[in-house]
Length: 229
Picture (cartoon, rainbow, N blue to C red):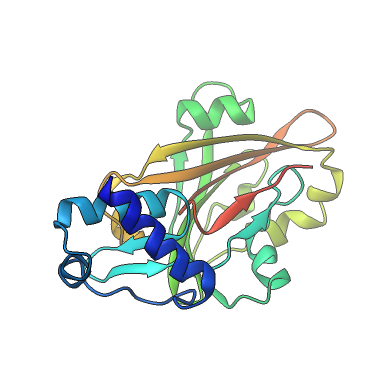
């Protein structure tokens, strides 16, 4: 099938170093002409490479060669930015929102909260070397952190918890899945509506079996490689 030939040709250029990480591919029109094929067939090849983690697409910008995925162990680490530091990858974050909300069913279940409990929700955008790769959500039970209810500035939740809570954490309960991006996530990450994102769901429980943090990271699947030891 022609799309497999195209896929192999592009993959070979990536693996040989001819196409370096971060390199922008020519437009779909130019690529289709180069391979003497239709754009439909070309997109089959590009989508195949995207699923394999070799390429990614940004809306209105085009196709790019993926950089090496960062290895993240969600069973032992909460701070995804720490992984960036370990790999010497430049990063920034942007605050999206912080608010007090009635705990949704999933949040209440993961934190073991009774009905009508309130949580403090913090969300931020994670940008690695100029690419928007993840939306991070953090939920804290308001009953445990009443002083944080006034959220006038960006709060580093992991730093706040590190001394009092994270030192007590015996393990992290982790769920990993793949879900379609919400409309907001698609816009924030500059990806097409409904694109599939890797969903990393971590709940931290202290020695008293009390849930004190739920963290959900919705990220581009080629940016992180999950490794649980």
